[in-house]
Image 1 (cartoon, rainbow, N blue to C red):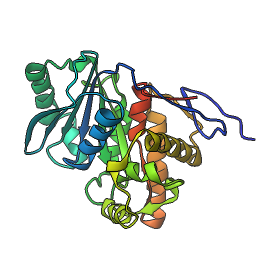
Image 2 (tube, one colour):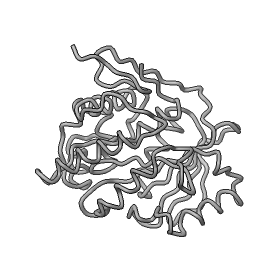
Image 3 (cartoon, rainbow, N blue to C red):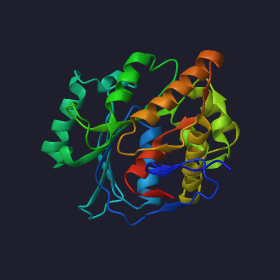
Length: 269
């Protein structure tokens, strides 16, 4: 039997247990996403419907909105999408982030310096094609709250080929073994199987966590450090790039669940 190792959370262990902490205070949380529909909906589904938190959004062509209004100063979930779906929007020399942080501080009393920030982007062969830039962002955005030598904190969480991989993992076992070239191909597959993200609940979310951990074990990641996600993120990226270089497809995997582990909403033991 393979011996399990530990460096924060376990993978590939036969007796892995997943605990959901629905009452945990998470502080201020900011998700910066590329899409204006699917990603915000999934985050609303997770945080407002499963965990019963308040969710606030500012999306392209949509004004500020608040959902599931709660008086809870110790938990605030904010979702904002980027100007375009291109990951280069979050480049250090791009004014988007500076303007965004200024807006949140001045208009919404959002303390950026004490916020967990997650960047959700797809890794496909059409919209985000600059491997070098993505690799640099993986090296830089490795901790949701603090990154040495970078002006702002944040953790980069990719989906291969798209965020729909998260939906798939909620409803199909061995979802990582599914392979798709583009997000649109995966969307068509979900439609053909009548897999709808509106059905995501606490039971399916637990399955998605299990699927992600199993995928990491298959990649060869036996443990990861949630305070420094660099090595794990890099191993996943290199694995997926190798698969694509040989077969022109990605193995379906979303790292969205990493943020739930980082926030303490999910415990894997």
